[in-house]
Image (tube, rainbow, N blue to C red):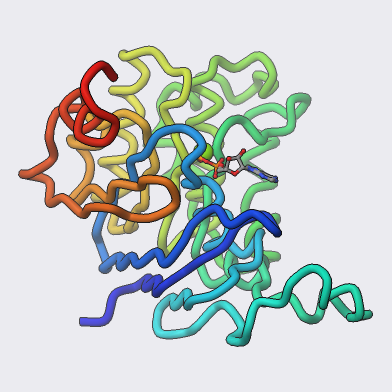
Length: 259
Ligand SMILES: Nc1ncnc2c1ncn2[C@@H]1O[C@H](COP(=O)(O)OP(=O)(O)O)[C@@H](O)[C@H]1O
Ligand SMILES: [Mg+2]
C-alpha cells in the first residue's frame, strides 16, 4: 500500500540557514504519527514546509500519489535576484496543499481575537477550501463540548485550551484528509491535556490520519502508532508505540543525564 503522505529526503530552512535535512516520513491512511523533539530543532519549520508556506530546498512531498513540490534545484538567494517572477518560481503553493486536504493547525493561537467562536467557525471552511466541500459544523462541535458552551464568546476571552480546540475545530471544518497538529498542548494544564487527547482520539477514530508534534512524550505515547524523534533537524529514530521510553529516559538518551 502506498502511504497517503510520503516525504522523501526533504531538506529546507530559512535561507541561508538550513534547519532540517534529509527527512523521510510516511503516513499511512488512518495512522497517527508523533513527532517529538526539543524546542528550536525545526519541527515547526518542517510542518510549514510540508504545508507549502516555506519552499523546500530539496526532496519530495507526495500526497495521495501527487508530488506537491515542483521538482528542480533549490536556487540561492543570490541567483534569485535575477528572477523577475519569483512567485511563479515558487516550488510549492500552500493553497493547493490545503485544497488537497493536507491541513496544518499552527502552533500557538492564530485566531481573530474579536470574532466569536461561532463567527470563527462559520469562516473556517471558506478560508481553507474556497467554497469546496466542508465538514459539518455540528459534527465537529460534538468533539468539543466546551466550545459549544462558548459559541458567543470572543476568541480573546477563551482560555488557552479553548483556543486550541477552536483552532483544531477550524482545521476539521476544512475537511482534512490529513491533519497536522503543531504542539496542541503548549501551555495547557494537565486536565486540559487529557481533554485534548480525547478530542484527538475522536478525530482519529473518525478516520482522519494525524501528525502530532509535541514536546511531551507521555502525551504522545497515548495517541500515536509510532514516535519519530526529531533531533537537530533530522529524524534520528522511529519508535513503535510499545518501544517508546519514558519522557525522562528519552531526554537523557538525547542529551545525557541531568535533563
Ligand atoms: N522566520 C524565521 N526566520 C529565521 N529563522 C527562524 C524563523 N522561524 C524559526 N527560525 C529558527 O529556526 C529554528 C527552528 O525553529 P522551529 O522550526 O520553530 O523549531 P521547533 O518547532 O522545533 O521548536 C530555530 O533556530 C529558530 O530560531
Ligand atoms: Mg515549533
